[in-house]
Picture 1 (tube, rainbow, N blue to C red):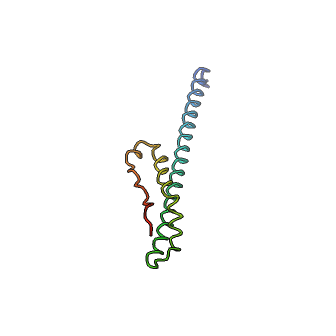
Picture 2 (cartoon, rainbow, N blue to C red):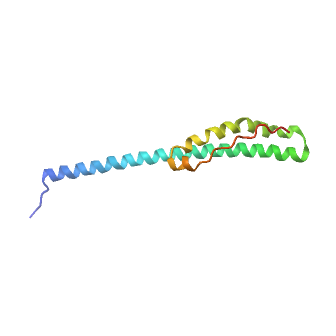
Picture 3 (cartoon, rainbow, N blue to C red):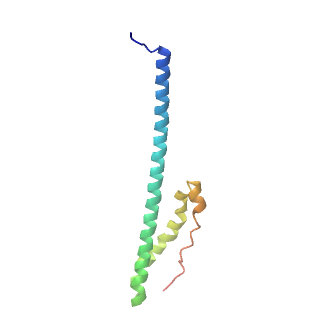
Length: 114
């Protein structure tokens, strides 16, 4: 005795399967967007950290020697640091919880002159 599936049941199973596929694909694309967002935030933070390290290098070289030539990394980093600080919160505000917990970035002390 062989059982056959009615065409309506078969069509219903196909439609259910298609719905699951569409739902899973949407979730996948949503996850891909968050990965790209995370990559953007990490790149911004790495660029900011690099500028801070450059500024610190200039200060560390200048303080013991007093030679203004050693301030070149500090001056170069200072030019782009405030811009990076101003643009940093933008990628982070995509999530409401990140926006709420993000403190305001203090202005870079561009008025420091040695």
